[in-house]
Image (tube, rainbow, N blue to C red):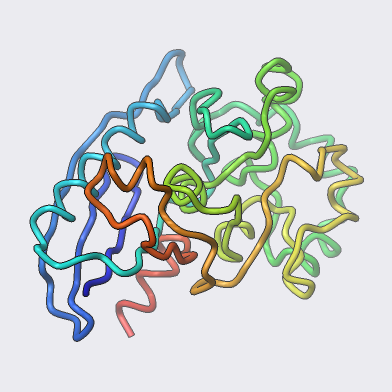
Length: 245
């Protein structure tokens, strides 16, 4: 039996299979481009990236010659993908360097006391975080916002598309500015201030939490066992620090 790690980055994704003793059994990698439809905009074509993820998972699973018992994902930080309840992708994924949302910063600075925000979330206000992207989508892409079942960070989106429940780990949830570090859950106080719909946000769980199994349909397509366990991962930078000891 083996374990698979999936890494979804800004410009590429990889899947690596390890034995239970840590020996690398297989590796697959594929690159993709950042889309820039307008000056200052930067996004990922979520549907195209999902196809890349499926290809590397399939290639690594086939090359390992050892059944994958469990898998987990780490990913880039702030970007989210809007999805429907039946696991359809509803739009692109706005990256943290995308300028959309900058116009909300002044008002947010007046509405959110910086000391209170830091006490709840541990971060300072900035357009690199997901909060301003949610607001931009709400006000400028209302049809996408209305149809969205959940906004999922890439480390939660890929497991969801594989068959898991819609759950994000703490490290990625924290990059929204809306996560309460002490409670380990979304901050109702901050949600109320910015007027976002709590039901459009996934559940939260610590890294290493079992959140489901690969669905039979996806397992058949990718060469995985349908009972493969899916476990929460984390923000790639946090995972890097663990890897570095």
